[in-house]
Length: 305
Length: 305
Image (cartoon, rainbow over all chains, first blue to last red):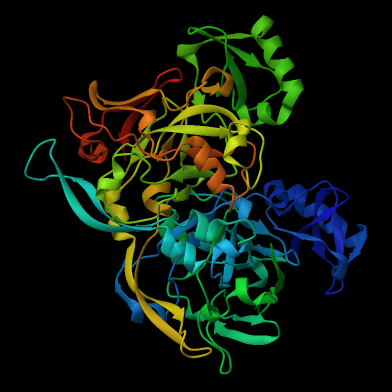
């Protein structure tokens, strides 16, 4: 089943795919989060919508983020099996950051970039939408917490990343002196701007429910810029699996229904293109499409402002 | 005016302070976010509650985060005027990160720590609650977007911070070769766990509306651990002001009603205590109180689990 969220007459509604060409409006449910929260009632409403709900041609859908306002968008960093070659020091477990819900946009909506952002490149990623929440979830139970899968373009400004990086002397307790402090040479980078700017989170169009994706680690994932194939990777190249990420992250953070986990950038270059890092959207403009086999295509034009 | 949010019979309600000893229930408004969204109607409901709403003794209030689920909690890093002495390289503008709403707890609720978190210390901070949203807000107009002020304890695990730091070769475009890449020696740290773990965001108890805080940069701010005064600072020592932060951050991120901005750690040690970094709550347990003049005291016991 594919479900999504669209704008309609100044309001929003959940929709369900009836075919590749047609969607049906799920009356009374403003977004996919409401479908998740709705349980049995929502499943009945979806069935009724498929049977006799008002139709919308898919090309006419004004897409919104499937979950309009997730409690958190937890994005996993450096999670491609090609990454470790470049890591001189780093955790052997998933690490992540939070993207604000204000950064999310639906498919078709413009990525709006300012010159001041410097370079901005796309990052094609599989995204997990949490169904049943939980903490301390064992790996063996992780997939029971997945409502479905969607696509996210984790837009990144390396210019702002470099700007918002500190090399500083961090204050630590001095082990040799009670109440004393010691300075430790440290680096920290702060992602609010470089990962969280407005429109830096295109997501969707559809969420495909978990029952239709038996193995989330066997999906072709591509990134196309203005018709040119840039990335051609497979979710099998994720370093840490969906189950590992859910289990490990839920040891510190409760996962809530509707939370989104961005699984990390698909990195493998196509035979002909450059890397995503070569696609400076601020300079080039154009349209970015991220596609995942079995889910669909997330397409966003760039608008410079 | 002081407003807050409390738990009551499995639901939640906004409250307003009638005196230091008594609060009144604002019927029909589940939290402070609803009061902000409610505009004139909410102001009338607050006035009615003060006049004749059901009373609750303040010591009996089961506090929740004033805004139950902010769109974002934007936390500003290294924003004390004492910081630049320790910064060898860093931005001359505010930098920040996002704390997930799942990390927030009300005053009185336990900070729940696992041994695996390693060291965890308190960070006493002034927090701004956004009223009217906006983007590209000029400094001169910034205070018109402030609904009020509250207190946040931006709990931090330096152990997890160190663990989730990468020294790696970042992929950048090669300026000398079209579609070529160059590796750049870089450091990144990812704050999801070290700033976003469950209970790492005690916030409240009250939000004091902006009209009662004519100058948010002239407030004594203290942090007390088990009766011992650790931090004794003043919000006048913030390096970047509330207006500067709102204006600068809104250049990249739309601020939404109910968003919270944590202004950065008050650092100045009291004459007698150590630094907040000496207060390892995982090892010491106890109770942490953060107080800001004119706002109140945020108090949370530590529970080891």
